[in-house]
Length: 157
Image 1: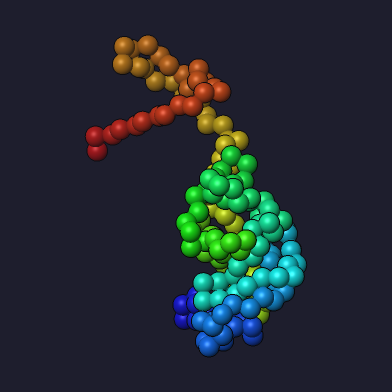
Image 2: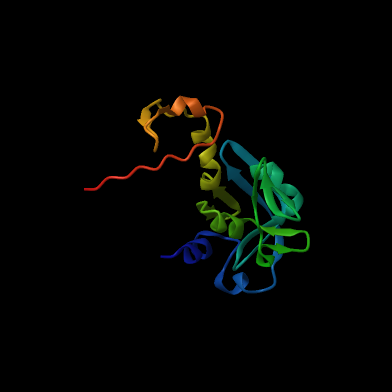
């Protein structure tokens, strides 16, 4: 069973006929991480869950801006299919960023956002090592602390 069939079969508010009809507005609960947000007015259709763009920061701390959906220093460009006036396609956005979505009736649960997972790695410190540079001088990785460094390795085997 694919995701769309699951959503239609698992949701009392959606049926195969209603999914392709004009969208209606209903209340829904959206779960993301430790946040549970009750929304009074959402739309569901064949494309998924549509929320008011102003509600997005309450759900996942992203904000719709002219350059895309932004959270801290991460901005993800948005196609026109993800926006319709004041409405924002939350499930379409989730698919774009590789986020898992599960829905049952009027409850929508969104998994971890892979693009933000990298922030955990920014705080990790690589172990120090020393290698000779092209002129034979010994260079330590710690010489580059606080700077971006690209380490390229190669093996002949």
